[in-house]
Amino acid sequence: MIQVRFFARVREALGEDSLQLAHSAEVASLDALHEHLCQRGAKWREVLSEVNLLRAVNHDVVHGDQALVAGDEVAFYPPVTGG
Amino acid sequence: MIQVRFFARVREALGEDSLQLAHSAEVASLDALHEHLCQRGAKWREVLSEVNLLRAVNHDVVHGDQALVAGDEVAFYPPVTGG
Amino acid sequence: MPLLPAACSVRVQRDDFDIADLQRSVLQDDAGAVVAFTGYVKAGPEATVTAIDLEHYPGMTEKSIAAIVQEAQQRWSLKSIAVVHRVGRLAVGEQIVWVGASATHRGDAFEGCEFIMDYLKTRAPFWKRELGSFGRRWVEARASDQSRAQRWHKN
Amino acid sequence: MPLLPAACSVRVQRDDFDIADLQRSVLQDDAGAVVAFTGYVKAGPEATVTAIDLEHYPGMTEKSIAAIVQEAQQRWSLKSIAVVHRVGRLAVGEQIVWVGASATHRGDAFEGCEFIMDYLKTRAPFWKRELGSFGRRWVEARASDQSRAQRWHKN
Image (cartoon, rainbow over all chains, first blue to last red; front, side):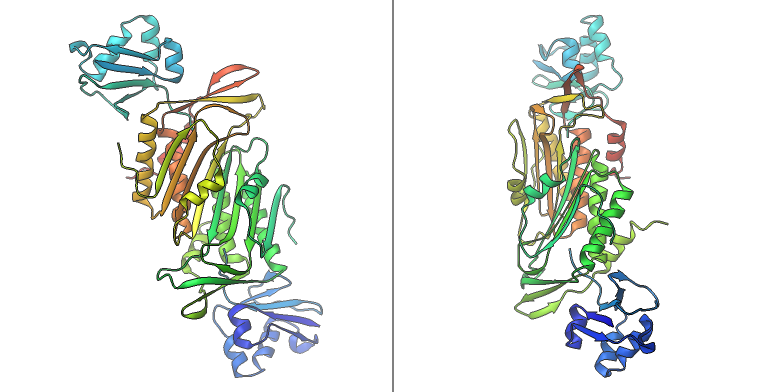
């Protein structure tokens, strides 16, 4: 399985805080997973196309694409605003 | 009168923490007062010739010479080391 | 997980914190200087904010702060670092975050503490939502926070 | 005497101070950031110092710190500043000085606080004498303190 998590504005706009997907060729990389989620509908494509969207795999920010393996946890979220 | 005060290493080396001098032509300026004090003896000249010695008039640091008037308070002290 | 350097602590919690206790926690033998930053909930320029909700990403939050603390320890000569960041509902005026760094010399403590805050603001997964007369709104990331953080980037 | 800006305080005292009280004293409406520096008596690299005697120049001390606080208020956007500096006999590990600055934005609080410390170290008439197994010795002024202070000089 791939665990997918959404936070803050992204979580709220999607109305979901997490998803579990079976690992497959369709979600074999971060970019593939991203496109797979966009195909869930217009709202998903809009929210996940936000220019400042950040992606993390297993709690590390990832810039660019990366292969995913079963057990990975992927997160999509907006720029951080803590502190 | 001119009130003269000494602090820290300078106070200790001179064995004095303050002096009162009548205002006169001999102490009409900071440089004149400085030389007047040096003439009190070899120890005074040595201590008051220290290259880093600082001088203040009425609680303000003075760089260079300045006229003194009756009632002024003059201080001689080494570089500060608080904080 | 980045190893938290010795004598350092990172806490993410709902409860308030005591700055005197935290200050004691970073004191070490011969630490001549402690610099401490405390962040508070602001009402905003028009005083319309009454509270904030602070969301975070459990697990990633602790890991990213530990990495920031580790980098600060590598770049400056610091005796001890403590970071506490609150999450959940916080009213205007409440304490949000405390970052303290102790060092032999104050320059290290000032730079280390400011570096940690600047990186925390741009790298740790916290999100603020303001509550008030306007309803609820997500706080937008500030370009000035990005440029403050970039000052520390190595060439 | 330079006028101390509103909401600022300067104290020179023998007694110890409470950093939580001082932090509260600089909190203002909508001050989102407080940066606080605390200085402690150090045992020194060979741990031979047991205490210090802090001498000062009453009257000039308060005046020179007020001038430093006033300059900080002019150069940064600060809500409130408090400075407390102890004098007399202080044992290793005791608190010597606290400087706190509150601001809307943390950059002002960090720079204002560090500026005040750097100027305090080079302009306020305090002198430290260390006591220990070596007897008594005056602390010499450090060139690094001069160069830190010079970073803030205007062109």
